[in-house]
Length: 251
Image 1 (cartoon, rainbow, N blue to C red):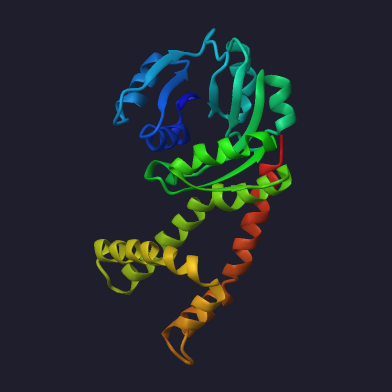
Image 2: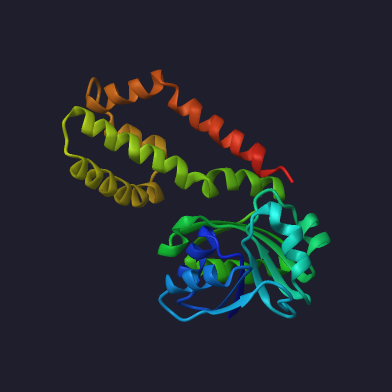
């Protein structure tokens, strides 16, 4: 598929690194030098084009600009896209339809793991584009199509923002190891291995079952878990999802 990615930012780069294997890409932005720097980080050649007066007529467009730049970006584009995929948090389908011309509209929320073909991408929009959307974004990882934009915004608070939450967990675990006397490199290697091995476990077992399998009566895990509960870690994560959801649904 030929894809046009508008907005050469960090998330766009993660997407492009994942999508370039299976698709022909054109990267569109305002700054020619930034576009060059962007494409230099890709393995395959990608076309570039300046945003001003760029014609999206009949194209499949992935919109990756900041939400506040939507109107300015829309005013610079010409034509009517075939399908517009928007990764803009807090920007509803209705707002997209009022601002940018396209035959079809879909919202998508991938995450940074896209460049490693391991994104968890949430999708919503026109049902007639569900199959195409799932096929496109499954090339960079897993997908979940939800029926409403409220569900989409909740999913954004989990899978879209989730890498930052997990990064905090990873950093804290490593810091804990260093505090007790481990070398920083060894602590980091242990955490990397822990995260790599956890995903297959989660695919097969409920989190509560995993916990019970590890936690022996009066053992090391029970002691550590008790400390987490005293620190209200579970409540803090639930609150994090709530706060992120509140921001995600703002337009």
